[in-house]
Length: 251
Image (cartoon, rainbow, N blue to C red; front, side, top):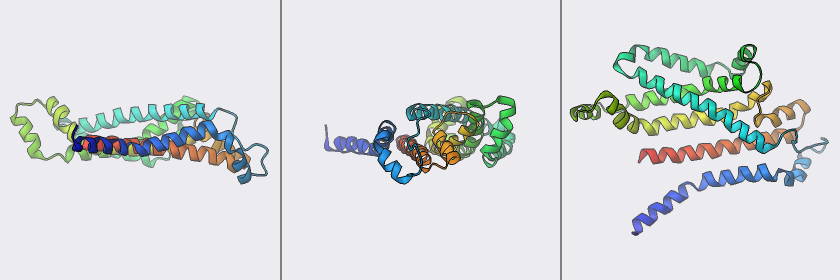
């Protein structure tokens, strides 16, 4: 193995250092929160309880990830799919409509989406997923459009000259070249939704927002800190991992 290969391998391992560090911190806090009781009691000395115990923090973490994961998967499928459709010759008339709908989805407050969805969908996870889906569409749609439309016409013309069909050009040329920009949009969407998912706890969804809501209701700063720090660490894990994934696509 040459020195160049060794340096590249070392660089690849170093690039994953921060995601691993954030993940270790997250799991360390999840499993070792009882060890911090003294510190939390110093922050909130007037409260009878400083450790959130209504649900396991690990259970809330898994539920939070599942809620964000389902919403993000739907947003990726709808956002990327719609963006591809409106960049085809027969779908370009719908480009302004798709862009405006995605923009409206993010400017519409998630709390308002929850309030409107509860009478139809009930309390819990489903309306939370709907709110996150609408809120996460814009970065994905915007970046997918930028990525596909930013490809040099000469590249596409060369692909046509090689005899590629429209479908082959999409899968072999357009999407691979646009992938770094698309991944950046997905990264932004998921990171935003990790924080936004906490509001789902206000309508009965199990998320890491539970300690935050309980802390606000009971005036317990220790509860709020537990939920906020865990959400922040989860966002850092996902954001740094997707950043690394974006670098892999850009090679």
